[in-house]
Length: 177
Image (tube, rainbow, N blue to C red):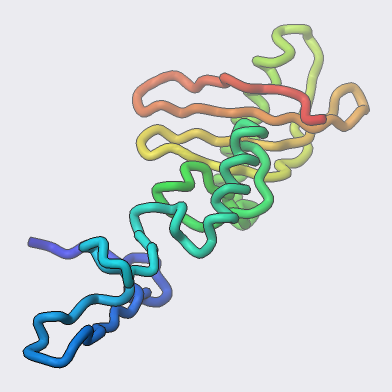
């Protein structure tokens, strides 16, 4: 049986330390685990690694979920970190990847053409402001970008879905207020 890979981890994180507590003198049969007890003993701290509501940074998760829901995935101030509980993540430093940045700019251009239709006007994407991404199988990008709309700069947001073996879809393309 193979072990899971720690690829990309900068340091190993150990589970919370568990301490044994001797309840009474004797043969040791009264030993209890004090922290993280899986048997429901009263000495448990209440921390459960599978339940984000018991995590020390649960306030960051609550804020993240509220902002993700309110903005449809485009805007959140605080990212609590990569986990199965954070389906949308920011893509930082994308400018350092010219091919990827050009691909995203192409998706933004396609979304703008989809938004305005065939009205004969040229609208160029001038800047990718930020990118969020999500999806365990198919990739979804949440792109905030600026365009030149007849000499006026406007900010837009586009949700771009790239299903495996499917057609690119733009379920959201809108002006950002």
